[in-house]
View: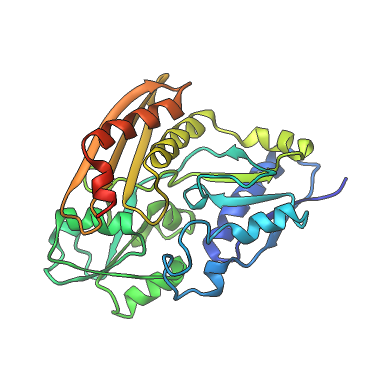
Length: 303
């Protein structure tokens, strides 16, 4: 039996995430050999270039998807938040794993939480979604672009180039760096990027054997939550370059979706919450988006 080849980026976090998928597959299919193959992504080849300058959406996944379509790998492991809303023809998200910590985390050199950072502190973040929400709370901080993998960002912080940085908490936890977290940012301050905290495995749509194997990793509640969040983003016409945030949670069979659209400079934000059945996550995302559009969300995005 031929080995199953998982494709991944080469960063420490991407490798860690691929190893999570590898371990779960080896546990469920002990007789099957699971190999990892690293694929260098555009974002890794130009680590100091901003995401916007590289084109934003898809910069972490394009090369992996090309490797899939070229039969160089059998499946690709992604942070779900990095996946564009449109899946390329011939590919399919075969599994969404059980979601881990969805919140963002602050790491500060002084150990001070966000609200106690001194005025003028340099706060590093690469995402407009984060920057705009932080500006809503505090306009007296110097929001500065930061690029690089988790290890690089922590090194830049430790070197004194920033006073604090904001990262996805799940990345720090997966790398065993949870002790570096100064503060988990509450949803009242910072809603996450749609899909944050979830891993997705992408395959060729006609690869029935691999699709069947990966079915064992699927977590239906996590799939419903991220589908609601991504539908909210899609209905607003968004991607990773616009300040749109969302988080869905499940209580029994009911999905609760909270979403936000924030002006890029943080001067104004629209937030809303809506509930619906777990079986209709896309409808829920569209309905909440339409509610915020009726309140002027498109005007905030076009500023």
